[in-house]
Length: 313
Image (cartoon, rainbow, N blue to C red; front, side, top):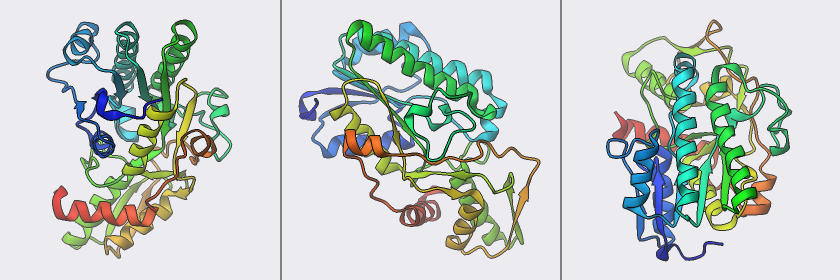
């Protein structure tokens, strides 16, 4: 078990991103003094030679892999091949190099998109292999799930210690608000704020609004990831979520209210909805990690909107 971060060199791939910044803060709060964040212009993690060079340069004791190519439904639909290859290649090279370099432990961040399209709600880890993922994000979800299999095989054959966590949809200050690649919360926040400021009478929303999701504030997700590094020794999948299910229609209505937008929400049913329902059971995270979400959905939403209005634009 890891109980002294000050003595460990931590390589945090994807550490310059939205979730990575939150994980960095959690590690520093625990006394970590050497948190190293490789950048893509220095180390292409899809290239095995570059990954080997990164390990030689940084000499990690622990590696936390947040790196990946991600996006909303539109981005996944436009780039299925790239999303599969990039995420698969990164995980493949990082796991093998971590093992061969004698890394103490690796934490791999998976995705809720790996679950079958039709999964009983709340999602339990035991259901992970009971079907194929929802088609629009299946390449991304399957690539991430393949890394879980690799970690399990490496634990069985080599005794390589690792942890594997699956966060639900994350949100919070610093999220990606770019229209073509953002997820649903930042997308709706930007649309509602811009519509209010321009005096527009409506906002276009993707899909039917009937599908549901489970949203977790980014700082809570970061805490779960660090707890996994500290407490888990073998790669059994662990959900990280709030355990609260909310429809996209309810979400859009709440965001419009917080953004003081009082116009019409128009639903474009020609756009894909994605998976019909998503909400996870976090019993395993509670039992194994002592994990408990601390930031309520409403509080997190207000903080995210405030950040966008004050500094995001």
